[in-house]
Length: 107
Image 1: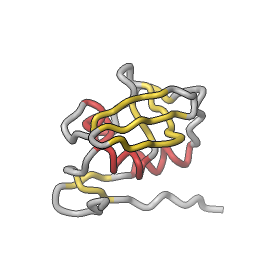
Image 2: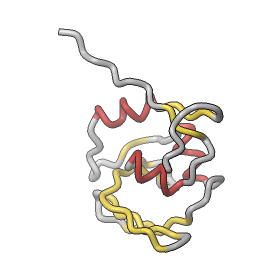
Image 3: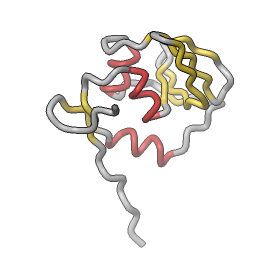
């Protein structure tokens, strides 16, 4: 049997970090560990992320942040062992493309 490859998804580059994390449900920590997101609570300009390993992260909704660059460029060193991100989700994330001219604007 042949395995299906995930279809390429296209998103705009200039999307805010909050909308992007709500869609992808992944978050890169400062040490380069990729976490899975359990819930997101918006609080005006800020948002509180709760990961599957029960870490609380307070983020600011900006486009040029470190985490935004890391998500768009798919930079991470390892995945969190406690979050247990499935392989299909990592494959889907690796095929995601970020483009200036085409893709969903996540409104």
